[in-house]
Length: 109
Image: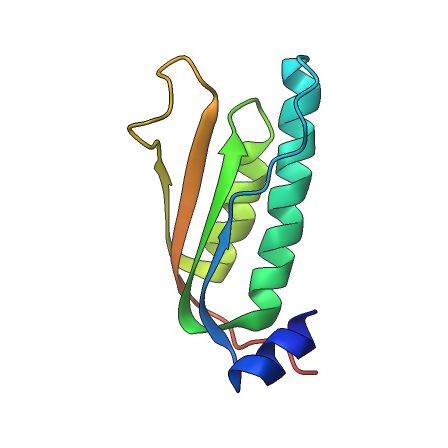
């Protein structure tokens, strides 16, 4: 998919946005791990297709393993922040990570 996207757009992309979420199980730890796996896959995709200085935004659930993901993002991006949309309930673990300033080059084909 990364090669198809880059070919269709004529090169790397400026932004990758992931709003993916697995169906909720009702078990907070399981739901957290599932959404973090999706976020990790989206980050790997972003690192393949982003242009230098590009941005990555992804939905995550707070629950314990997000710090490992943030550490990985901080190696690849100049700035990594959290954002909680106003529409999100205050008791919800949902938030977004916003990473800007991609440090790398898109991976070669």
